Image (cartoon, rainbow over all chains, first blue to last red; front, top):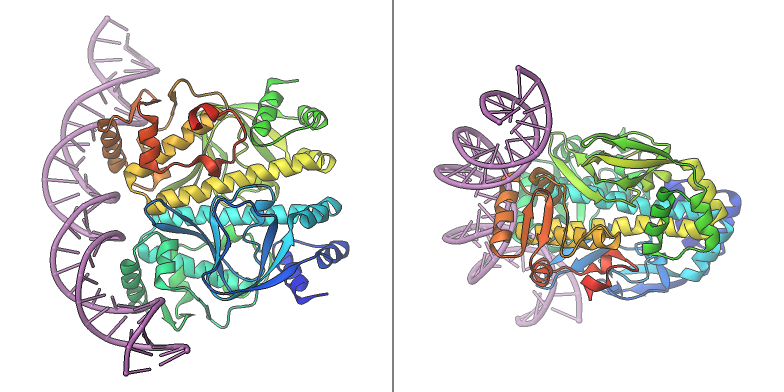
Length: 246
Length: 246
DNA sequence: CGACACATTGACCAGACTCAAAGCTAGTGG
DNA sequence: CCACTAGCTTTGAGTCTGGTCAATGTGTCG
């Protein structure tokens, strides 16, 4: 079994259960792996993709651009995610998918996923569930952007990414790689770049985090959670995060 | 065939295609219809529902409440919608569902939906698609709340609801019932109630809309669309809206 | 050593918030 | 049929979070 298939199986097991037969079905998927430089558009807004993209290494994000050039980032994606799974049932992309860092990604033809789902209805349910969790994260981001202050928003995003990185074993002891510029953070949080800078300084001055050379150290997890009002229920995770969520 | 089944079939046909056999499958679903007073919690945050709710008449909304009592409305729902379809694959509700007006709703046991989907994979795909459109609307709302001014946000919401109401034939000639208080609008747009009031006055003074006794008249559709930067692609609709979207 | 991308700072501005007080309006009961 | 209420809308005044513009640091890499 390829390491890519293992990654996908591990991801699916973090949100549900697989039978041996389903595991074999996933392992038999045909995928084409590609390396992508950072800042590269993977799936453009308005396109009609025929593949889904499984992120193997690196970060990606989805975003929309307004007429006046403003950008809103809709989600960040980390290894194991399939950021454009929705394209299986929505012909036209209503946003773009771009690499944030250098990435490795596997491309799986829609047809193969459809066949897989037809043969393994349980896998269909699990992939459906994955898109529903995607939507649950959108909902929480709406609350974040709509009702929290800039400081709370940033804290909430850091909590979320820490838990998600922990779930795929990419976070260390109270720290994880956060390969985002302040401009990226701004576009995700719905604030200006200048204000993001000041917000981060504020958060540092509160002793909650330290952020240097693209690595975020969480100095006060309880404080950060409390500030953000973070409740991980919306991530609908099964496993792997008990230690930090206890 | 009951009128409720007809409504559901019509809704599904607005986002995809049904075979005769699938249509019969839907018609055979068991549903319990209930009347609900306005402001009634239908599915509470944190609960683990065993049914899905098909809205037959009236409006509903989903929202999250923060510790400090602030509320963010996540979506509005109109007849034909199944606002808690995600509960089929997400055990625990991460938000609440409430009636906005007096409503009629049909409740369908999860088990029946699962059986239906097992027997009609095409219907499964269509329901999946419905939840993906739900998510697409969340994405657009994120952009709305994160990157548009209060005036633009309100304009965008009005455009969206007009198109959705038109798709289910509940909008009139440039007008439709909008049974929301200014407080509801505020919580959906992420602004304060006072500012919503001033924003509506501004929009009226621009000659774009008139809003009286819960009915919204669109006086300048092109102007409203332009102000909002409204592009209905994200609604992923099939039919019924050509006239206004042309 | 430049060049470029990113982070930081200062000064000033504005959109949106809060608090508090009036107006409306559709029901309700007398 | 009218007074009363409750819920909603409107207005005013003062404040503040976060935006804009423009300049200056800092760090990395060829």
